[in-house]
Amino acid sequence: MERIEQIRRLNAMLLAELPAYRAQARKFPPDETSQRRLLRSLMNVRPPMPLSREFLAAQDELLSAEREERGVVDGAALPAAGPHPQISLWRGDITRLRADAIVNAANSALLGCFHPCHGCIDNAIHSAAGLQLREACRQIMEAQGCPEPAGGAKLTPGYNLPARYVLHTVGPIVREEITRRDREELASCYRACLELAGLRGLESVAFCCISTGEFHFPNQEAAEIAVETVTQFLRQKTSIRKVIFNVYKELDEGIYRRLLAPDGGAAGGA
Picture 1 (cartoon, rainbow, N blue to C red):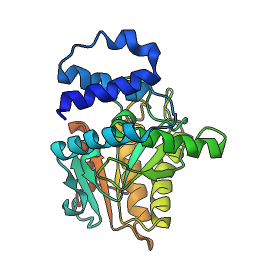
Picture 2 (cartoon, rainbow, N blue to C red):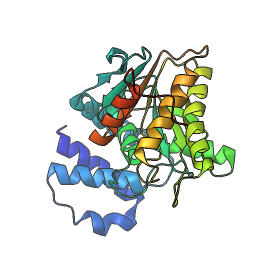
Picture 3 (cartoon, one colour):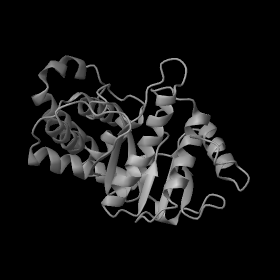
């Protein structure tokens, strides 16, 4: 089956479940790029519901092919950043990283981003993993019975991602000025993810820049807290052998390179 036919088939199955979006769907041009954008949009807005085997087979075939086309980056092969043998820095799309777990900066509902094709990392991870990820998160939240608090961590499979697992953590939302609680909650995000990964015997974890996007935590101070918390954690006995700081912006890459340099003052954060 050609790619465009595969995408149209998936769109048809989703629109059968989501008839309210049919009028909007007709506005998308018939070319492959536009139809693929429609597919991502429909996946983003679809609420957690049972998934048919037919849909999952077609979705997984498409997402796994796209994963290979994007190119998988082996986290284990990334060089150490400065004098920290267990810490690496990589700039790029976190959904390309092969690691035991990547970290998703989630919201308190923990169900992913429902804004079609939004640029947040939550949307990117859920879109690349597939709709199974939203369903897995729904099951966690249903069992929990309340919103996910800031500073914790939950673990799900990675599904169609190169990573085996996704660690979901809710960072603090900075309203005006940063508070002591904001700093404590951000540090807790990093610790909770590492602790949970260690409990599961994982060896590699890739962190995004938690709370620095939609939640408005200043990039410099967030990076200082991240580096300080991670380096402190790695001083204890743990299964974790590698932590990757994944950045997407040149600004964050520069900040982390300075902090992780031999004279970077990495102890001055949290």
